[in-house]
Structures are given as C-alpha cells and as structure tokens.
Amino acid sequence: MEKRETFVQAVSKELIGEFLQFVQLDEDASDPFNLNELLDELSRKQKEELWRRLRSLLTDVLLESPVDGWQAEEDLGEDDMETDHGSKTKKSIEIIRAITSVILASVSVINENENYEALLECAVILNGVLYALPASERKLQGSIQDLCVTWWERGLPAKEDMGKTAFVMLLRRSLETKTGADICRLWRIHQALYCFDYDLEESREIKNMLLECFINVNYIKKEEGRRFLSSLFNWNINFIKMIHGTIKNQLQGLPKSLMVHIAEIYFRAWKKASGKILETVEHSCIQDFMYHGVHLQRRSPVHPRVREVLSYFHHQKRVRQGVEEMLYRLYKPILWRGLKARNSEVRSNAALLFVEAFPVRDPNFNAIEMDSEIQKQFEELYSLLEDPYPMVRSTGVLGVCKITSKYWEMMPPTILVDLLKKVTGELAFDTSSADVRCSVFKCLPILLDNKLSHPLLEQLLPAVKYSLHDNSEKVRVAFVDMLLKVKAVRAAKFWKICPMEHILARLALDSRPVSRRLVSLIFNSFLPVNQPEEVWCERCVTLLQMNRAAARKFYQHAHEHTACTNIAKLIHVIRHCLNACIRKAIRECQEDGEEREKENVSVSLFFIPAFGTQEEKG
Image 1 (cartoon, rainbow, N blue to C red):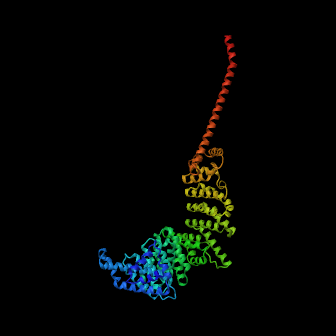
Image 2 (image 1 turned 90 degrees about the vertical axis):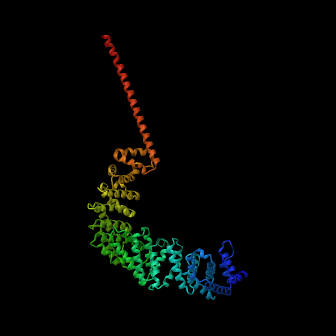
Image 3 (image 1 turned 120 degrees about the horizontal axis):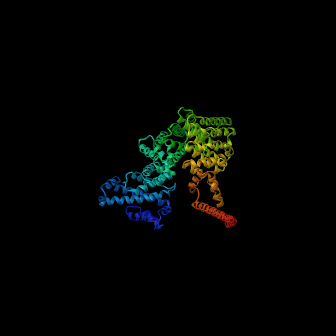
C-alpha cells in the first residue's frame, strides 16, 4: 500500500528522481518491481490522481523545454548538447520517456467507469510530439507508436487520430527496415487506413507509400503483409486501379516464385469485396489478367507470370465456392473469342487457359444447360487437335491428356476413344511438325497416371512403336520417356508396345540422351540385380547374342543405374565364367592331345613289325 502511494506521489517535479528510479526498476529484468502489477493494484482514486499528475508533469516539462528546439539542438552537434541547455533537454526527453512508459502501461488497466480525461490529454499531447522528435530518439518514438497502436486497439476516444499517427509511422518504418515486425503491427491496425480521406491532399504521401508496399518483397513474402495488401483494395475504387497498374508494371521484375503470393493477394481481395469494390476487382483486375493471358505474346516475360496468377484462381475453383461461376462469367467474352481468333498465337494462348480452366461452366446451370455447355467444350477440344497451327495442336494434345486423365469416369466412352485415337493414330505421326509428335509422347504420361486408362492405352500404344525410329531426337527421347512411364505404372509390358529387337537396334545406333534412357528401360531385363549372379551371366550372353553393339552401349551406361559393387560382382562373375571356360577348353585340348598320342602310339606299334620284316627281307 505504501509503495503504491509513494509511486503516485513521486510523479511530480519535486520528486522527479524517485519517479525516474521507479521506471528504471521496471525496465531492469532482474528487479522484482513490476509497473503493470502496481498499476493494476491501484484504486480508482489513485489511478485518476496518477493520471492528473502525469498530465501536469508532461505539460510542465514541455513548457520548459519546447519540442521545436530539440531538432535544432541535435543539428548543432554533440558538443552543444554538453552545455547546460543541452543537458536540460536530455533530462526533459528522459522524463517524457518515463511518462510515456507509465501512460502506455495505464491503457491496459482503464475501466469504463473511471475518469481518464487526463490520460487522454497526455496521449493526445504525445501524439502531437511524435512528429517533432529528432531522428536520434528512436526509443521514445517507438514507445509513443506503441501507445498509439494500443490506444487504437482499445477503441478509446480520439482513436482515429492515434490510429492515423501509428499507421503512418509504422508504414514508413516498415518500408525502411527489413524486419517483418513492423508489418505485423501495421496489419493489426490496418483499419486505421479508413480514417484517411482518399481525396484529400494529405493522403497523397500515404498512397505513394502504400503502392510501394506492393513491390516490396518483405510484404509479399510475409503472411501478414499479404493480408495487409489485400485489405488495401477496400479503401477506394480508384485506388484499386492504381494498385493493379503498379503490380502490372512490376511483373517483369518480380521473381516467378512470388507470383503465387501476388495471386493470393488478388484472390483475398476478391473474396472480401462486395458491391462496387467487387465489380472493380473482377473487371479491372482479374478480367484484365485474362485478357492479357490470351493476347500477350508468348515470348513476353510477363506472359508466364500472368498465367501463374490465373492458375491460382483455376485451382481455387475446386475448393472455394463462387470461384467457378466468376471464372465462367469473366472468361465468357474473352476465351471463346480467343479460341476462334485469326492470330495463331492468340488461339494458342486461349487454348492453354481453356485446358487449365476446363470445364469452364456456371454451377448454377440446370442439367440440360450443363450438358450443352460441356458438349460445346468437347467440340472445342476436337477443333484444337485439327488446328493448322502446330502450337495449337500441341496444346490440344496436352488438353486431351489432362482432361481425360482427370475426368475419365465422367466422360462418355465414345468421346474418350475418339480423342485418344486421334492423338495416337494421327498426331503421333504428324509429318508437318516434330513438336506435335513430341507433345504426344510428353503428354501421354499424364494420362498414364490414371489407372483406368491402362486397358485402352494397352491396345492403342503398339501402333506407335515406330516412333522409336523418328528422325527427330526429341521425339525419340519423349517416346522412351513414355515407355519408362508405362513400365513404372505397370500399364503394359513395354516390349509388347515396342519389341526388344527395335529397342536394341536403336540403342546400338542412337545418341547419348536416347541410349541412356533405353539402358534405364531394359536394365532390369539384362542385369536383374535381385536374381542370382549366374542369371546375370546368362542375360549377358543373351544380350551379346541378340545385338553385340547394343550390348557394348548397355554396359557403357550400366554404372549409372546400379551400385558399383554390382558392377564389380558382374565383372567377377564374367571372369569366373571365362576362367571356367578357359580351363574347360584347356582340359579338352589336353584330352584331345592325349587321345592323339595314344592313337599315334597305336599306329606306331602296328606298323613297326611290318617295317622290321621288310628290312630283314632286304
């Protein structure tokens, strides 16, 4: 009880030393004194007296040492601060810092039935002082900012002025520093922005700083930063257009990895918007991205970034209500016209978006309308496969594989068969474009991920076996990659799609990119590491008998597909077999030699008496 009363009485010019000592004890972590606990224990009467004393002390200090002179003294330098007047200023700042600490702690213990008029006056005075503080007084600036933030969050009288001050100061500091703490605090008071009148001249600086936030990586990467940026769309319709223009101008310079965050900002803004704001976000931002996604040149560095933004919305339609209807409505005047455009690049861009967004529909359609819309989009798929421009046909192949893989069970069997026969029976042999042929084998693995497609593909794929001998290397590479996928998902026996004789013939002749893949494809067939080593040797002999040149290529790349120990074992087994063969050959030679000697001896014994008798006769 005595300490509480002592603290209240210490808030005066006469006992300023004791007051400062109390505040220093609170800042000392090793001391048990806690200012928050002491304030919480004060009675209503003691609190009101404390706040009156704080107001009186703050007023006296500012009258004796006006804030206007602080900056001038700092400009003069440290030597001038050593004078009596300079020391007095330093003392005044120390007292104001202590007063601010007590006021900040007092905000959390205010009750509605208490008279905190004096505390309000102190807060308003400090709010006015903040802008005049010299740059060196970082600590005091931070304390007053904390006071403004806390005052705003408590919703106390004059919170608008306090919130505006805190908003501007935190916004400015967040752009100057690299830490995310200020961004988090700014997000906490983001609604203070609505206290600013958009059309007033004083808001010009705010607009410029807010637009700078949209090209600040710290804001884009941080969760609270993205939440803050998306909230800015609700300030004013005209500001939405400024935001969108700023982002578009900076798209080329932003890393592609950040585009998902940019898209998230737009999506959150759309999700929270309503009325005119929603209409502006949809037509001035999202639909503008759609237009540029269709009409930008493919080689433009901005094009892939625009597609990243749209892809985010396409993926959200599966998990967020209302997105599918919005996409259908906004794409309607752009996408279908783009698919029929005379410019082939526009058709190609539109095809990419169509494939990714498929099906583009309004979930509110009845069954008849839905069937009609889906049928129309299947017809668009057929049109893409027959387009005179190779890039559009390639996109059509991608679309067929993606869509059939995803919606296999929902699509009519006749349409499935017709589309895949078109791809494997015609476009796989498109003589006018190697890119189209390549896209067939690059995209079929997408379809192979769906097990339901395996029986049909097992029937269709043998027809493309001669693509292994395509005159374009990239087509051969894509074809072998497809065979590797067939093997991996066990869709069919790869040698039934492309006979082993063809594979070995191509392995013997082809370039490194193709031959390495072919070795990977047939590796387990000719070096089955999970089987006994005798089998390895048998398979080695079989491979040599089938194609010696292919065997040489196979063993050149074998080390890339198994451990060195297995290669060493294979060498050991081959050496062991060779030694056995050599010993067998030597033994057979020796046996043959012994038999010949025996035969010679027998012959000699047979002829010697005859010769002897003849001599005797002679």
